[in-house]
Length: 380
Ligand SMILES: *[C@@H]1O[C@H](CO)[C@@H](O)[C@H](O)[C@H]1NC(C)=O
Ligand SMILES: *[C@@H]1O[C@H](CO)[C@@H](O)[C@H](O)[C@H]1NC(C)=O
Image (cartoon, rainbow, N blue to C red; front, side, top):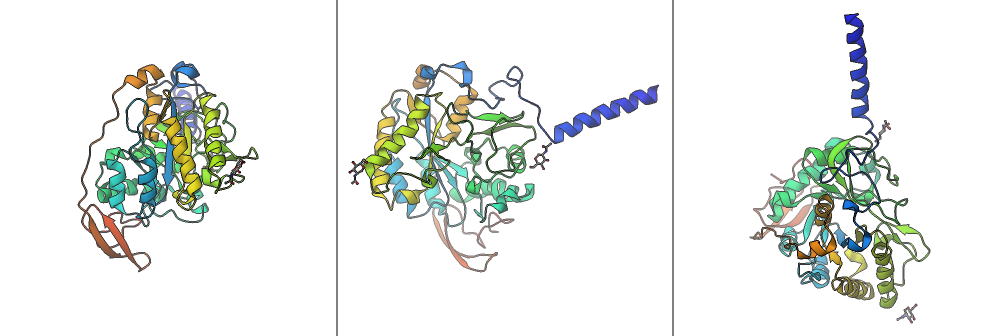
């Protein structure tokens, strides 16, 4: 009898163990509550009405930061304020290869968010699809250490990541985030939840989001935030996750049409459930096309003057979702503070240990011995 009970107990515990390590349980909003847990849902956090909800706009750029694109970033983004008087900020998902860390330091000290986009930005996307936990750890957790070191910015200020090509790698990237204290991921695109759009949520329980670039996570990974990518709609009504990838977009020489394109995509959020509106693009669509750049600047001028719209970093959006307050209260909150840092620039010529080539490298720290890379993020 005793033996049988023990056996039953063993069976029960092994079953629940198997469930824990494979699939997360369905989400119950009664148990999954803010600030630490949120089910995947199009409901506005805090049960707010749309008209009481701040409309956040997240402008985010990807890839390396260097002496060419910094010129555009300065022109388009610096010295902007939201209507509450706080700085209007963007987010940079920075990849390491070819990045000049002196400019990363500058972006940070201008109040913008520095986030991770991998060390190598390796091609093709199957590299990310098939990436093991260890590869993701080297590409992102090690990149966070690297970024903080060479850009001389606080380690804790780096909280977000985006996988190259928006290619997910199952549970692996989210497990690395959880183990190394990253707060949010901005890689997972949806086509099923666009209007009303999906708000950010945690992975404590099963996500109901559609999976466009499998494998998607299916384990329970508590405390990790998914900031879903809500696509734009192109001129044919097709979804596009990144603005520069919209298939039928306006003529890149026509500012009027591009201004309308920004506005009409924004309005779907603003007149909908006010889920954060993402403007995710590459600098390569701005500098060569002054009409697109002017249209973006005009669009930002418009939203920076609206009383209930705020151009903020992705990290600030997650912080609001954790503790949602109505727009009237949000407007009176103190502006975000950050600890300024300095940069004593070093110009380095360093030989790469992985391809034997010489790389120029500028950092706010002493020159590395070899070009920093996978397995040797500080180039020691
Ligand atoms: C979870 O996803 C992985 C792929 O990342 C897949 O191999 C596995 O079968 C899935 N588990 C369940 C229980 O669906
Ligand atoms: C831009 O597009 C608008 C509307 O389609 C059109 O009226 C205008 O002539 C175009 N301008 C240029 C410079 O092509």
